[in-house]
Amino acid sequence: MPGATRKHLKLRISFNRTFRLPRGQRYSSFAAAQSSDKVIRFIPKTEEEVYALKKISHQLKVDLWQPSSISYVSEGTVTDVHIPQNGSRALLAFLQEANIQYKILIEDLQKTLEKGSNLQTQRNRRSLSGYNYEVYHSLEEIQNWMHHLNKTHSGLIHMFSIGRSYEGRSLFILKLGRRSRLKRAVWIDCGIHAREWIGPAFCQWFVKEALLTHKSDPAMRKMLNHLYFYIMPVFNVDGYHFSWTNDRFWRKTRSRNSRFRCRGVDANRNWKVKWCDEGASMHPCDDTYCGPFPESEPEVKAVANFLRKHRKHIRAYLSFHAYAQMLLYPYSYKYATIPNFSCVESAAYKAVNALQSVYGVRYRYGPASTTLYVSSGSSMDWAYKNGIPYAFAFELRDTGHFGFLLPEMLIKPTCTETMLAVKNITMHLLKKCP
Image (tube, rainbow, N blue to C red; front, side, top):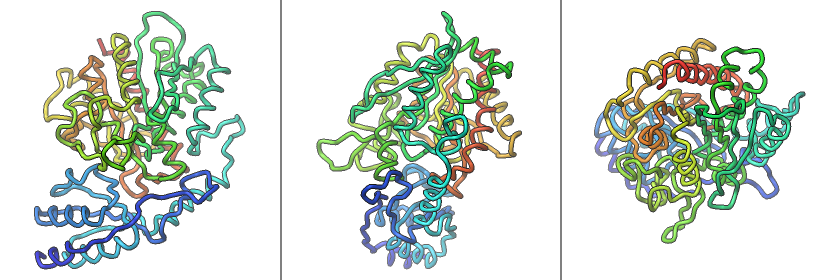
């Protein structure tokens, strides 16, 4: 194996990993990927395999889907990489000669993208009731939907902006609940990473379910009577828009760097809690770049300011990501037990059991550092350290078969099961949280 490693680590291959739209196309899932781009999974079993895989991944400039940084790859780490055709040949040859086991998750990424795009064009983007919650929506569509709800459900919904993004887009929030003074609140954000489209789909689903069921469902009625929900359907508005128009697999924000051409910051590494420590990168071209300083991103700054202002009333923070099928709670930046562990762990246990009761889908749960990996500067840790006692991050479906390209046919089951988990956490909050 050492000989094979040295041989193949000499490869130098360059390619464009950006999935761009042909001129005039609207949805980036139509993006012009090279045919036979692949998504490949490998799980290194020894330190030698870890070293070799890190080297070849760096040299081939793979687009890492899981984990979020090559630094997280260690013995036993499930590693999913997207690699274009010219690089995939070299990587597969290396894996075979080095006798490293692998699995091709997506054989032809372009075909998968086109299949999803065809379904989008075939299915009506509006349902009989007006808005189709079982398809992915562009930023413009989501914001128009928010404006519409603000006009048609003024008794339960109030829409407002907490600031503007780097590119000048409004950062809209929906405040959901019956108007009352001194109510506790829950914060929910989706789409902090642009390519994780199932996140914003869930935020929209949650609002829809609340509006449709609050009269018939005693639990939902209690939730809206006793709590406000601050819902941010798209946190990373610039990145999300870019993932629809230019690069389907874009992750970061879209801010510019004065010294590098690479754009964007990982909005989930930019918070002032062990900022730019383990699990974050100081290099602007990395997907886990922490930014030039904490809260450098206007999106992060705006949300942090809002949470600071309302932290006496906000009792839970929920952030929705993909993919891994996990329910995570603090700490993410260190291996330690939170002071209210028993209460938070109990809420997580009940939530994943409720979720599993719908379709049998299993979620792992636990502290983020031990369940997923150590990462500093996350929104969840920041929320917890700033006095919000219930802080959770969901990693929604799936575990890699579709990855970031979760088909629209799975939006409904994913959101249906997740809804039960969120309701469970919220009811736990009403009963238990001080």
